[in-house]
Length: 299
Image (tube, rainbow, N blue to C red; front, side, top):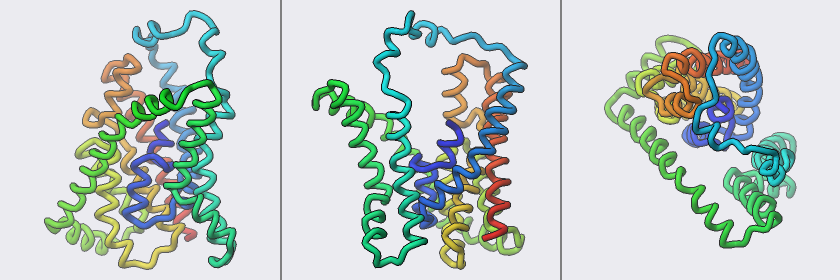
């Protein structure tokens, strides 16, 4: 879940960064998956197995209370294939848009059609309509039921928009006050690759204020002028986007709302959350960054 949230659109952070850097979402998704697989293996599977043997945490009371007593409730759940089709549809369409744009001439009718349905807005709209139909209409829900469920699902979006907007404002403030120019001069003096610099900026912002989304948007706002002034290929900008996401994923700590979400929902103490969630997020960010840094050397 951490990898998907940080690396793979259409989650808010990578989408916002891609918009600020004018990155192709197809490349962002592709490199997000490539970096996310080893990050999941090392952070989630290897370290997860290690730390799970070091601590015992009972099932939280709120989970035990809500657990079904038998298998009757699970029979009405949608199939795994149905859920994965809904989740995967926008990703496949966006990737198809990127692939056809590279392989076929721009005037091709196929490119134009795929470009339309592969646009993030249309791809997500199609996925939402598919969800309404397969999870709603086919399962006996009325239009009023679907509308009520959809309305309730929009409630958390307000906070996401607020956090994303706040990160953008914070980035603009840093630029307007001269921090952006000073940072650009410092970057030019270091001679470090843009991928690594983007990662470090996102990491510093993440450590200082906590929110991964704010760190992503702020770092992207500071890096964007350098991207516009330079000649970076679409794949390289995709790598830079994932590098920012990796830096913003590192070291989830007490200033991060996600830290407390995991801590409280899983019934862990602060120490246990640091030993598990904080370390896992750091491993995910470090491994993801290492992967895109190696890839960027060939772009």
